[in-house]
Length: 262
Ligand SMILES: NC(=O)c1ccc[n+]([C@@H]2O[C@H](COP(=O)([O-])OP(=O)(O)OC[C@H]3O[C@@H](n4cnc5c(N)ncnc54)[C@H](OP(=O)(O)O)[C@@H]3O)[C@@H](O)[C@H]2O)c1
Image (cartoon, rainbow, N blue to C red; front, side):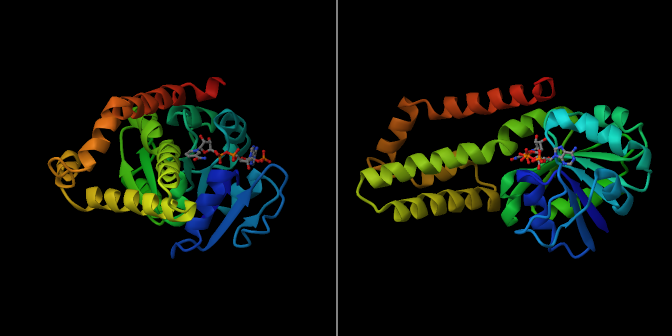
């Protein structure tokens, strides 16, 4: 399969980096606005224009900003066929919009990946449009599984997923930065503090992903009566961390629904 990525910015490059090891991907094409080769991504063949990319690709991945999707879709519309799969990664842009802008010529899958795709630890949610068959969805799933985990959801939940996993890495980095600062305050060298925090978050996340145990029960397991963890947890409750994280995700999801309007 030949994959073309329109928009080689932050996300487009991360996807390209992950896909280069996909056994079924025979070639990776990409475009950016000025058709400049990317010296640090030599495995992406840069084409001069989106139409040239669509002509050569079996799967077209749209990775431009939400407000740019309409222009790109209209530009490539006449070259699309039912055999070419379009995957739109833009937040806020609906499948119906892409379908209308492309003249309803190709199956469309909507994706919301996140940046850890870059290292094969991404989380992508997929939703399929009416013209996309289960096989199209499987093809998209197989591509994004090279970049991490994949969940299939109803399109109506895309903004929710954007608020949680699309934006989630930013929340995680803030937590890592804050706890690293705490380590420095307590006398740990900065690099050691950051290692302790990042590995602890990764290990805890893996515990959740690899067991059916509720996170609250896992927390109880590490909270000794009259020990030190419960003192830390009291501060977390006092600072309303749960409520703050909940509000952050809800605010991001709400904003996600309005991105195309500026
Ligand atoms: N970043 C994330 O974590 C993330 C996660 C999930 C979804 N998304 C979605 O992914 C999309 C891209 O986000 P991003 O953060 O990667 O944005 P970005 O870094 O600004 O990348 C957009 C890229 O599209 C290129 N571009 C613009 N118009 C084009 C055109 N007509 N033809 C070809 N290329 C064109 C831009 O080129 P120039 O630099 O030359 O303008 C730029 O390289 C957005 O819709 C966003 O909602 C992003």
